[in-house]
Amino acid sequence: EVQLLESGGGLVQPGGSLRLSCAASGFTFSSYAMSWVRQAPGKGLEWVSTISGSGVDTYYADSVKGRFTISRDNSKNTLYLQMNSLRAEDTAVYFCARERYGAKSPWGQGTLVTVSS
Amino acid sequence: AIQMTQSPSSLSASVGDRVTITCRASQGIRNDLGWYQQKPGKAPKLLIYAAYNLQSGVPSRFSGSASGTDFTLTISSLQPEDFATYYCLQDYNYPQTFGQGTKVEIK
Image (cartoon, rainbow over the protein chains, first blue to last red):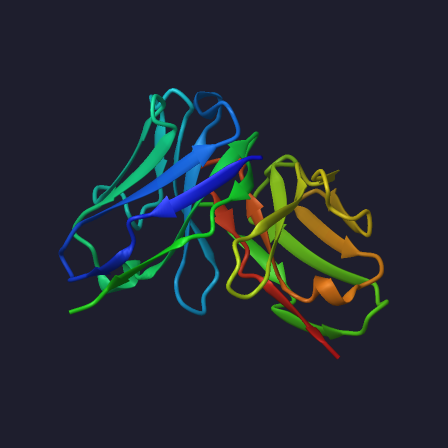
């Protein structure tokens, strides 16, 4: 069974940093691009970042470019999102998702990041 | 960035109703569009990919269609478990962009 499990969320002060992880199982991790998508409380979905299967190619939303870094460790079947210079507007549930020809499936259950003093 | 204009933002419908939700892209995106269902407190679930293709395990009452830059999700006969919020997503280029969502509520 394909599974994605996020971790690393929590409460952080504005300007702080946090690293999210997404542990994958049930498929050949290195063969798939992976993405992060977030959802602010009561709001819609926002694409954040995507990384190719090899890790060579990365893409970011303008809202996080220069502050967030997506990476992966294919030997550990794990996807990461390093978030620096966090702002209140980064408060959201962060989901990881497997990519297949652009479509995202499955998704993890999400991890909540709260940026507040 | 490509804008995805989704309508309506909400709708009320009864069990058994036919429901249609539309997304309009601000430019051509071929058929690089997916539809997702999200229930409260849960992760989104892929329903349709590449505009027309039903994801494995998704009931056949869900279907997708396209005409130029207009994309439609149709639920042929609404079931109680279909009350949820639906989103379109263009994956034609980066940044990928979602529609604003359509909340389907019980009438």
